Length: 320
Length: 313
Image (cartoon, rainbow over all chains, first blue to last red; front, side, top):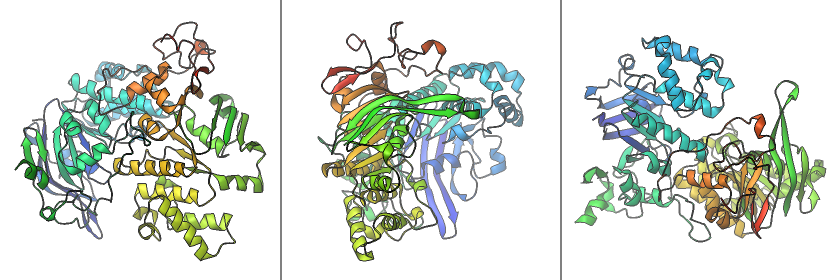
């Protein structure tokens, strides 16, 4: 197992109390797997991925363990994590196009970063050029400043930099959200390529766009208000979802071929509850069309079939 | 109702405005009453520029926009204000459309003081409640709140409600869905479709083809400032004739079909050898030396394409 997480809890400290953004998450990512992580904004998906690389206040580690390649990842220890960042775990941030210092040459940015991790830019130059080719950038860009590149080129540059030291786990946080369709496809291609060429061992692809995940991910985990609601192979999540939330989420996706005048889609009524004092029991019960009294008790995450876990009382009940 | 005639917009860039960038190049189309037209294109295709010109937020370099038969460039002062009674815009980012230090419902007050100073507070309140209801918002949950207390979907719907407080006949909706969550974006789309039934015309600017297909009557595919294909939405999407439209449709991530390949034609900087050629020349897999710049060809009554080889590609 490339990544194994056990009962992870990450809260945000606020003056009014703890916001339970990630509340008891356990999952595993296999070697060579691209796992999609999807959910509405505020469901904790970015918190989860950020906690794996840079856990800093107001984020607070509460409990849980993270293992990367069977070694414990000290995510709660800021200093001890330093050795793991970039090499063990690396991230492509959400606004990658704005992540680089605009007035420093790209080769300076890269060599600073490599030196900090005990590597040398000169020795690695050949490899860097090879990677640039992979994302269709010319090696001449190394002598340019980030302001001289377009947003898309900067984003590709960040993708190269993030993966230079062949990290085991790559976190991709909403990297396709601000892009148009053809660039989305290009970025997805690169992520798959990184995995196929074994530049990275596994990927967590965070996004709210399930249709992108259907194209690139091997499995998808759906989060809702800090909890896992469903995890299954991509095909199963999209074609045969079991949790009511996943069902509503999938059925609200507009697609080429669906028109308002013929078949209007419906959104999910209501809003997610506050995570300062989340309700007892299933957190989706107030918006759920099939909720019952049983849902005042928290549903456990159960394995329906190998690789398919769901947290809903109704799912077990139908089988009975 | 609103008509664009050979609209061109040239931006001057660099020191002393020496570099010229043609953002919109000879675009013409018209929008009838109660119609939704989607303007679809990649970033940099000039779709937002067209929306801004229709809202008279930036000047037009060449061409004419006619609103109910009158030239938009002649609207100034009182007349322009009158124009904004009928034409309004809603933009991409609902969070930055609001001033965070004032309550969110201040946007309604501003409309009153600017356009309806003669109304009493109570009369105005009725108008506001009507508008909120038409966008499916519960006044209790959104009035008297600060922007940070509301969700993106709620804020975006408030902005639509604000636009409706006037006698709005035409709405420019510029990427209004892209910042919203999957669960609320469809609600906002449905509201637009409902408003259309009431006679509102909408220019729906988007890069997401599935959203454009979902609500629009007609679609315009834009590339580097030129119209590549235009026509009835069903026709453009089911029988795309331009190689660019096909590439876009293939690149749309769908949940009923996986991409067969990850390859897409790369975008390059415009080279001198492509001047006078079709704008899609350098990316088009089917391009030949004869692919010169091409105007729209009428294929059917409601389907136009800017590719001379539409017949055999």
